Image 1: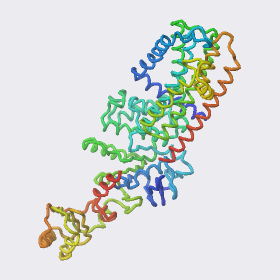
Image 2 (image 1 turned 180 degrees about the horizontal axis):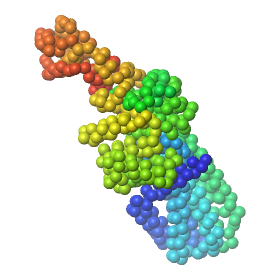
Image 3 (image 1 turned 30 degrees about the vertical axis):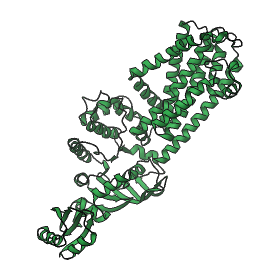
Image 4 (image 1 turned 180 degrees about the vertical axis):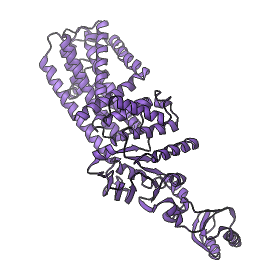
Amino acid sequence: MSSAITDTWFMTQRHFRNLIRQPVWILISLVQPIVWLLLYGALFRKIVEIPGFGSGSYIDFLTPGIVVMTCLFSAGWSGMGLIDDIDRGVVDRFLVSPASRGSLISGRLLQGAVVGVIQSAIIIVLGLIIGADYPGGIAGIVALTICAVLLGTGIGALSNAIALLSRKEETMIAVSNFVLLPLVFLSSVFMAQALMPGWMQGVAKYNPVNWAVQAGRAGLAAGPDWSLVFTRMGWLALFTVICTWLATRAFRVYQRSI
Amino acid sequence: MDNAIEARGLEKTYRGDVKALKGVSLAAAEGTVFGLLGPNGAGKSTTVKILTTLSRPDAGEAYVAGYDVVRQPGKVRLAIGAVAQKSGLDPQMTGRENLVLQGRVYGMRGAALRSRAQELLERFGLEEAGDRTVRTYSGGMQRKLDVAVGLMHRPQVLFLDEPTTGLDPEARVDMWHEIGRLAGDEGLTILMTTHYLEEADGLAQRLAIVDQGIVVAEGTPDELKGELRGDAIAVELEDQPLDGEVRRALDRVPDLYDIAVEPRALRARTDSGARAVPAVLAALEAEGVKVASVTVSRPSLDDVYLRYAGRAFSEADAEEKKKR
């Protein structure tokens, strides 16, 4: 067990170092949420005037949505790095070593979680600068971050599972493009749930992205509805556990195919 | 136990009914270099994957450093170093970082870890490049680092899967020197796969020839070559004659055996090449078969391969490539 933890840490360090060596990646992942926040914030500013929207300021409404969306997108591409490792023989090299098998996936997920926390913090501060209010305070911010990171970990595990099963970058790109954006639009990231068409509201109920946005928004609101926050957090935790289990199964399939 | 590697009756079928191994047995004595020779797709890599615990055999058993590869994979992993066909290096990390990470997963820490990494960088002439990312390395440098990574934890048995494939001639000779030096290391057993005949001939004390999932011959290079008497004659033909024509012609030549007719070439063995060549040429001309070139050679591993696998090595290799 102790070797599983230390090996995970070695792998996390490795992924993190490799990330830092790609300045372009850092720049894009910093600029992208800024663009979203400014662009969508300006584009949909008047949306709050629609009767029944239920929020006074669109930037208040949007910021937790962008936090969740950013974590979702980074996590969705997590499998690309794994495909690269498989192609280069890095995965097989560690499989013939005593390295803990689980660390090959958990190292990536932990790195994703650390990046998720950093990205969330940056967006939250940025939201503050452009005028968002977080009446829920620190507790709400922590709740939002936990939910976004849980979602990211689950989606990251799924992404790794797809990588292990498909082993093709093309498949990965197609699946991610096909799934990620619709998941955002089938949630309340941009639009109040009450104003969505009926069938979309139905789908959103089962959308983990929506759970994270709902919980984050509830936590940041004045007089947070903690029971809503904790139930969504619980569902997200369950989602993450199931996805991680699927990734483990996918890993077995990969090992059998070598 | 005297054999560092011992395999008996290994079988492996991949999904889609690809039977990669049909019963491979081999044994490598401690402290020796064992060569596994065969064309692409013969089953060399599958054998290495099973011996290094990466893949499980469907049948048969294997022991590496005295441990069962199926029942004691953890013990085997600690005892072996493996350099796969695919490099396995992280190109975004420096050479030193790759070595250090490898050492860490084997439980090495602190000063011992750092000095071992430095020692290996020096040993493989990579000390100057050690702090550059691997993406800047040449193919030969990467391959050396691969071997260094495999040696990081001082294994008893080292597996080298096609260590020189894809290297330019100069880098290949360089790698041969490195492997030759490693072979002198006390107690280190090396199993290397290759599809270069001269590589197996020069480096391995014993070798096994694999073809289509079985070992077709095993022994020292000299033993294997010694089983063939006389000279080898190879004739290239200008166009593709009917099989019968060539056979008819060669039947008239005395002292010719192990005759193999290929689409545009023929091979045979004879006690004296100098005497047989004029007779072969005359016989072919009498049948109207045009000859492009003739070579006479002492037995080589290629001939050994031809004899046991029933086809020329280069041909088997080309066939495999076509299949892919």
